[in-house]
Length: 454
Ligand code: TYD
Ligand code: MG
Image 1 (cartoon, helix red, strand yellow):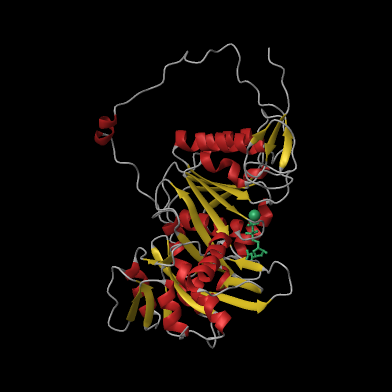
Image 2 (image 1 turned 180 degrees about the vertical axis):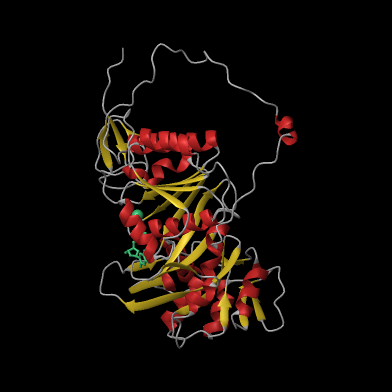
C-alpha cells in the first residue's frame, strides 16, 4: 500500500507541489503554499466500472420538454452579466475582495429573485441571522420572501436543501463551509473544493441554481475562489477601488452568455444602485481638459463604455524610472513606450510615467493602445487634446494602426455623449454619424505629426 504523505497545495491557484516553497511556480504568488492532509482514496472495495451509467442519444433531447426559462432579477445590470437572467440548475461563483459588497449585492439580488417568484434561500456562514436581517432592513428589503439560515456544516446544509428544495440558494461564503469527511480546516483548498463539488452536484441533480460567494484572499491559509473556477458554470468578479463608490461586476467565464460582460453599480447608503449609463459616470469627473488626458471609446462585453485615460510624465531622479500603471495592462504600456521610442523617435528614458484609468475601471482591450499613446504624448508634450475627441485603435509593433471591432457602436456612444470628433485606424469599417467627424490614420507616426506637429 502506498504510504500516505502530505501534499503541498497553493491556496491561490490550487496547484499541487511535491515540497514546500516560498513561491508558487504555477501562479507566481508568494507565501500561498500550505500543507494539506492527503485526500482519502474513496470508498474501498468498489472497483471502477462496476455500475452502468445512463446514456441517451442527443436527438431525443429535442423531443423532451424545453428547459425552464431564465428568471430575471429585475436588476438589469446583474441580469445582463448573467447572460440574460438566471439559468436553472446553474452554479455561479461571485468572487471579490472582502468588504467590496458581495453580501450586499447578493442579498439585493436574492430579494429581487424572490419577488419575481423564485423560492430563495440565503445561507450565511459569516453573519448571524439577526445581522443579515438588519442589513436587509437597511436595504429596505425586510419584507422580501427570502428564507435565511446560518450554517457552516455542509451535511446539514445539504439535508436542509433536500427537504426545502429551493430554486435558488446563496452560500455566503464558500470559505466558511466545511465537509466532515475532509480532514482539514475550513478554508483550506481541500475543504473549499469538497464543499463546491457537493453543492454543484446538488445543483445539477435537483435543478437548483447555486450562487457561491468567494473571498479573494492575500494570505496563504485561506483558499481563494480561483481554486473552484473550473467547477462552476459562471464566474463573476466584483471589483472596485475602496475609495471609489463604483463597483463593477464582471463575467470572467460564462457557459450561458458572453464572457467579459460588465455590470456597473454605485455603493450608496442604501445599498448598491444600478448605473445605467457608465460612460457618463466615468467621464463625469472630467473637468477642464488638461494635458495627459485622452478619452477612449471602449467595448465591455456587448456594451460601449467611454473612459478617460490619464497620464503624467515627469523627470525622474531614479536610475530606472518609475512606470506606475493602474487599470491598464503594464505589459501593453511597456510595448507602446517602446514603439513610441523606436518608430516615432520619442524617448521616455529618464522620465517617470504614471498612468491611470479614471473611476477605477480596468481597460484591457488592445483597442485602447492609441488612446494610451495619445495620453502619454499629450502629457510629455504638455499639449491638451481637444475636449470633444474620442480615440480608439490597436498599435502593432511596426507602429501601424490596426482596425478594431464594433467601431460603429463606439462612435455611436461617443456621439450620444456629445463628442464630435474621433481618431480611428485606417480601414475602420464604420461610418460616423452626422455629428461626428472621423479621422482615419494609417500609423502612429502620422498621428504624432497630426496632433503634435512633430
Ligand atoms: P459587504 O456586502 O458586507 O461586503 P462583502 O460581503 O464583499 O465582504 O459590504 C460591506 C461594505 O459595504 C461595508 O464597508 C459598508 C458598505 N455598505 C454601504 O456602503 N452601504 C450599504 O447599504 C451596505 C449594506 C454596505
Ligand atoms: Mg460578506
